Every structure is written in structure tokens, then in C-alpha cells.
Length: 284
Image (tube, rainbow, N blue to C red; front, side, top):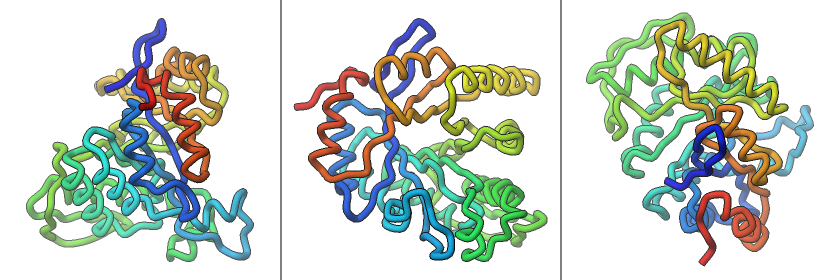
């Protein structure tokens, strides 16, 4: 695993992207990342753009690829690159289908999946999926807990307020045991509560590094008070560079994700070549 070193320790260097049908192909991106020493690649998710709600970048959102299919292509093109969601919008997803998708991807990739999850913010998008925005945090919690039961039980059942099913059997089971790490996205009060209850890692929303450092310290202190081990932290950098990466490591990041341009092959490869020294890799 490639990593960057600072006075505070080491962190793996990965990438974050929103890929569309007009950008570099996912399998080509994955091969280029692995060749240059990147540890992982995370993809964002939006299913569509409601016409009545203008997105910040509607072309980028409405043309984005399904993350699990794109990540499967990326896994098949590589041997070591970890593949993840940043984040999967669980309140808009059926938990039984999603559990099978994640387990299948973990099987096909040989145990390289990282599942970032979030509650989402686009209320019109949620409503089109039949999700009440007011219940999205409860849905996120119950659906993640239900998926963990499915991944770890021969006969899984779950009885919550919004998720309820009698015993079922589902295979394949994930390669990673007990299951792929579930990384909780967000920095708010509810996200932190979820993190401490059932998260295996944290993906805080980007922000000022001083604030992130204080947040990480507080979360780890709360986790220690609850008898939990050290919570791994994955930070996304909207403006990647050596100084920013070192600062993220000092703030407590175990993994730093460089945000890639949503662009064609040539522009993305130039970006990767320029930032490959951060991983210790080098373009061929």
C-alpha cells in the first residue's frame, strides 16, 4: 500500500471521482490509479436530477454512472486497488438488493470493497424513490444494520421501525469478515451518532482543516470512552496538493482522497501524473 508520511504518521492515498458517460472509462481510470500507486478509488452516487430542482452541476449529477457497476469494472481491471462508494445513498436503496450487490462486488474483487454510506440531501430525489426525507436517518441506520445481519447470518431477519423482514437466506457472503467496512459519511450530530453505534470508519464532509482536526479528536475520544478502538478516518481533499495532504494526515486522516476532475482521458491522466509523487508512485 502506498502512503504519505508526515510528522503525525502515515496515510494511504486514494482518489474520489464522479464519473459520467462522457469521462474517462472506469476501467481505464482504475488501471491508471493502480499503476501510479494509488490505494483506492471512491465513486459518488446520484440516481437522477429532478427537473424541478436545479442541482449545483446538473450535467455531472444526471450523467453519473451507477457506482456499483462502475466499481465492478474498476475491480476487474486491477489487482490491488480498493474500490468504494463515497457515498452510497442508502435511504434510496433497497437493503436486500444492496447487500447482495456489495457482497457480489466484494467476492469479485477479492475483498477490496469499502462501503461509504450517507443519508443524502436532495429531498426531491429521495421522494422520487418513495423515501420520506424526514425518515432518511432512521432508514440509513436500519438498512445498514439489516445489511450487516444479512452478510453475517445464514438466516437473517430484521425487525425495525421502517425495515422489517422475517428470516431470509442470501449468498454470496462477503470475502471480508465479518463484512466490508462501512464508512459513515457526514459531520453532523446524527452522522457522529451513527458512526459510534455501527460505523467501521468515518468519511467527514470536507471543511476547514482546523475544524476537521477538532472533530476527529472529539470522535476518537468519544469512541474510547465507549470502549471502541481507534476509528479510521478517510478525508476528501477538494484542492489536492502535498501541503494539504500533510495537513490532513496531521489532522488524523488514515486515508486521503484526491478529488479527480470529471473529464476525459487525457486531462485525468495529466492530473494523475502530476499527483503521483504523493503516493510514491510514478507514471510509466
